[in-house]
Length: 163
Length: 382
Image (tube, rainbow over all chains, first blue to last red; front, side, top):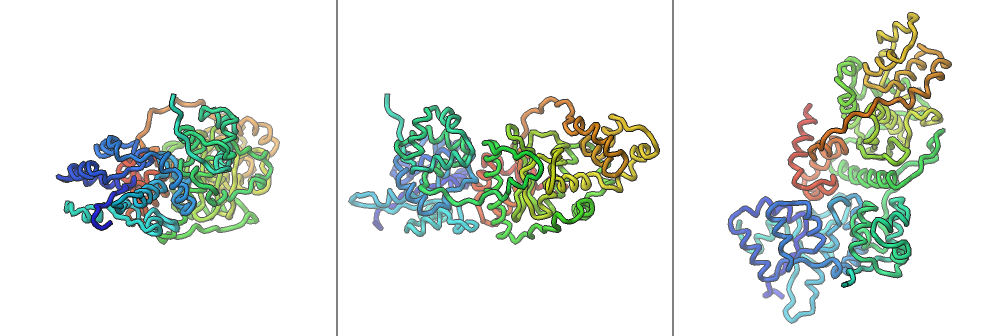
């Protein structure tokens, strides 16, 4: 597991923060490299949440259909996660927000537990903080499920991208 | 033809979503393009709905799609309103428009409470009970809101009046939001708890909204809530108390006594439609408020008041031409006021939530956040 490079499941908040970073030379090529290596996972609900945005990065995410994980496939695991961490479902956010968090955690678990010869780690990339106000956040849920969570800085540093 | 992909929704979850939105099953089935029997089977967990239909239902029920993942709906605070306390007025029916607005306000209130605590903001002070004389309390509240009659007389128009009243009440510690309640028979509501939240009907006449705002302030300063038709003629109990409070807040006795038109009426001039409208225009209140205050301050007799009240109670100016589209930042300030967006932006700066969270709570694209931040900051400085 140590030798196999990890896959990254990137949530909506991380894509939003990446918009400010993507202009740095080399970032596009590195993202393209992750896609080519099959190491980037974008749950379909994250794509849905990015629909209102027309930044070059959002358009790029939409175009990377090979990385999109369909909601119908994630639904059963996402249901389990939502029941386990109901705080990930936020009724107050409904407009332009489908509630992608349970799908992000579900995608990471499915990827990690894939029955393959060389399993690999799946890391959630998010800009959310631990312990949102009185709520379980995506980071808390990931911690409990033994899924590592990175912010963008940690992600870049783990990949030794040094931008 | 390939069958649309389906997903399993636990029995009861879709029905809960529909009931939460107070939506009729026939209406909901029409919205998602499936017949009632199919929707009923999905609600009972006997068949799996297509994802596309679920997305349509999520939009109609104003829920995130993820709400349909849950086998047991999340506990959420019920709006703290006892509708039986709508003293004296016919109970407004809780239709879909009102249910959705109440759910949304209650959800945002919980969020605001958590953020206020995390940011160490001062709580809202409940100052009295409904046993207190509303006239007296209105004077106290007006002093603490810091709006003088002289300032009120300087306001250019009713829009400026609403902005200033709203801002003063936000400074007092309440959240003031606007939502279209058209289609319900309610014109405003308020939810107690800290921070209290007032929601006005965005489609109502501006001066009616000013009165509704003052009326709902009456509810929250005595620690109450209400789903209201402010100014309702048959109001009793706490609703009548809040009407009286609102009248006195907007048109204090001293202002009435010093008003040139009122002085002329006291000297024997006949009351006319023009005079009533002129008093209303001077203080940016509706003629109904002016008419009520003329009676309450004994300028006109109860009989004279009663003879024309039905007309004034429903009087509205001719609707003006609708304006063009507004920038997103202005819409946010119109709908959420300044206090709530400011709270979210401060929380984001302190790392309590991400920028994506802020935009999703405000229901706007994240691209709009810088302009919202500028708009809020510039209006807070004024």
